[in-house]
Image 1 (cartoon, rainbow, N blue to C red):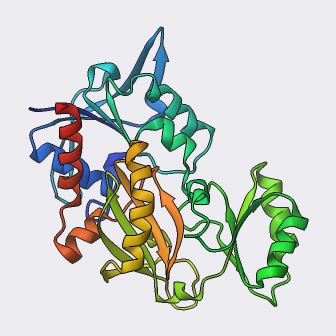
Image 2 (tube, helix red, strand yellow):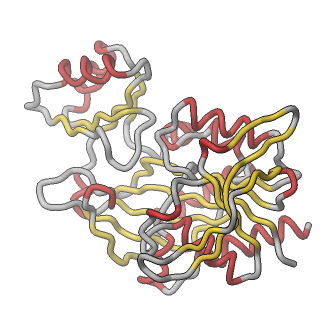
Image 3 (cartoon, rainbow, N blue to C red):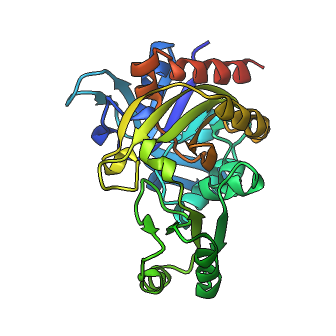
Length: 314
């Protein structure tokens, strides 16, 4: 049965169609006969009891430079849709959080993916705190003395914004580094948010594994290898994706967190694993579907739609 599907995302006209996971999900939806509508987060509104969006019906094709055709701009009532995808990129700021509150008003009558209540309450670097035995030593603090004490205990650390993304603002501070106070001053001068610090994991040189889970079940992984001389492995900052399999430890981690993700309506999730340690659980706008499909032939987008279609049929 065809579904009416809306995508809340960053401008679709500028995505990399050979890498963007949202584009792949939308293209799969179109292939399955579903009707597509696109809007950007700033066009989401609450108006006299209705959650509305101003955007465009779209048709997609895998043709670089000519991948989207827009229908006429129109305002829609999102409660009339079967599915709304929450897919804009972080940062996870108050604008992002507001969209989760608005979309929560139509869910689950309209199925919002991922469940906006739990996206809001389970951001990437916080949900992992529920699994301390799976994660490296971690602290979340704004107080410099607390961060200094953590560094004194562990020597080599990673310091990063709590709600950042794409590798932006990530610093490695080794035992000889003298920049902690300056970085703390810089970050706290820009934001009132705390910072996250983790013990540095040397295994990152071998790659930061992105494991993709659909409805709590792992479907595969890609490895993201940092450039020479770089700590960050994110593809946004030059990390190189490569084929990799799932280890027994990866499956152990997924078996622990998968039921929690399923319970919280997190249909499409990407977790980050360095060596044997879980570092992030990405629920806002995970990536990696197209790379996994190229490396393993796994059509993750089809798996996702099978889950969504079953939820709507139920």
